[in-house]
Length: 209
Ligand code: PRP
Ligand code: URA
Image (cartoon, rainbow, N blue to C red; front, top):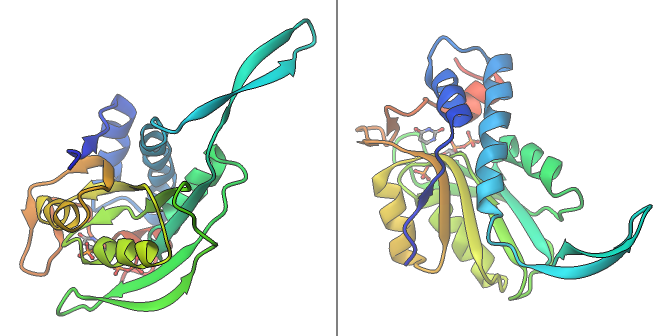
């Protein structure tokens, strides 16, 4: 089992504070979600293998590097879309699969409503994107679905994670790597992360009541 990686960076500390602030409105929330997502994704892709690649610069021939493996990004809808846009800025031609899950308001158990995943092979690097890891139910379910389709190494990129969710995911998927901007204190009685930032999807998409 690999301990989760918490990405420490002054820009994350700043933007995460804006995201957590209840006064922050949707347009600003979206901008800061993009900043934190990009920095987390830089760390989440740190272990990707590269292979040598010979090119001609305008002045000389040199051996550079290209990414070796096929990478597949899988946002967990809907909040994972916030991280997908950042992932596409970094991995320009990344194929994208989608898993649609929605937590039941009362039980916090995820219900599946959509799934479209490209062909996966064991040597593909799968990057699962979900900003909030609370009980871990949604990511546990997502990883099961991806493994059923033959996924190999799985990296989970999150923005805020609860200890309960990390424990559940790593207990059931000890081979997974979790990279997050923060590990918060706990879940409340409604299974929301505390201090957290509230309902990410509602705040990002402007659907708060
Ligand atoms: C949120 C979040 C995760 C899930 C985390 O999604 O984006 O997918 O909750 O909670 P868990 O770890 O307890 O499963 P939500 O179900 O609210 O749907 P949304 O993204 O459509 O808002
Ligand atoms: N989903 C969210 O968006 N926020 C939480 O705190 C928990 C689940």
